[in-house]
Image (cartoon, rainbow, N blue to C red; front, side):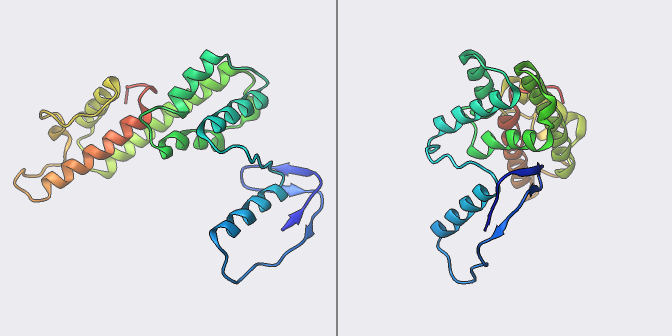
Length: 211
């Protein structure tokens, strides 16, 4: 691993240090999961990242996210503002752990945070980003599943508006590719499409419903 004094430049894909000292060779023998984890943490610390040992609960992780966003953007969330922001974008009760993090991670990686100066701008920028991602993923889903475009957009928009997807009635059937209900693959295709749209709605509900 390396030791350093001061980072000279840093981006999402690299970091430049003013000096380093090579301290180890690659270990080609077996390493336990614990050894790999400790080595990874040490490697990140050597690159300038701070290791906060006490971040071991979801509540503490969210509190740290709040602190870092406030520090990076020189602003303060009120408790009410933070609760709305967190429950809308970071910690919706219905989300899986992947859903809770994917939009935020993508937003951070694709946004120049140095251009965001206040909390209103942070929220607006994140909302705009999420809407663009919603549109992009909806179009990709419709295309990959070969769905009827306009019918699929109406079904997805309705599902987003009511915040859940439903397979009751015939609405879902109208968006599927032309296939006989007697085809053995029909029910499999219908269930697969429904599950993907349901996951999409869970991820993006609260962002907006126009597709």
